[in-house]
Image (cartoon, rainbow, N blue to C red; front, side):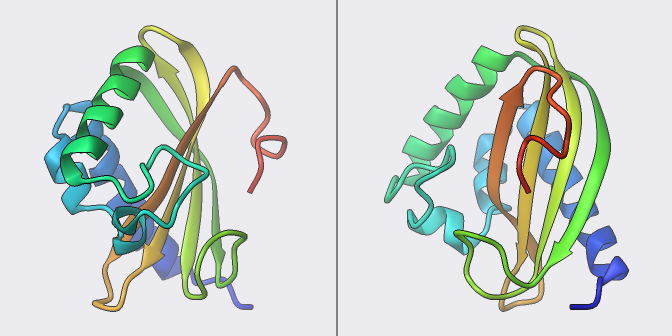
Length: 141
């Protein structure tokens, strides 16, 4: 597999737009910028509710964000282009890890996985937060 640096850069831009929407509490727009996979309910190991409606997703995500508190600092620490990932369909993916400081819960690692959809757009398919300054390598792919 050859690393696609251009794909990584486009995915980073899409992730940062999505994170900015989340930080601003614009959950309907986050939903719109999420992948068809995350909306379908196939995902069971992340925040996305299996088979949940847009309203359920927005309510769940809003509660999750309120518990963490606003992101006060965020720094990209790793990026990985992949054509195969566990629990993800075949295709192009980019895994991004950010070290983030949250107002209420302190420091953590945000993992954002994006997938390239059939229309060529990069969209968030999975989002996860591990609280505490665990090393990027220890917190999974």
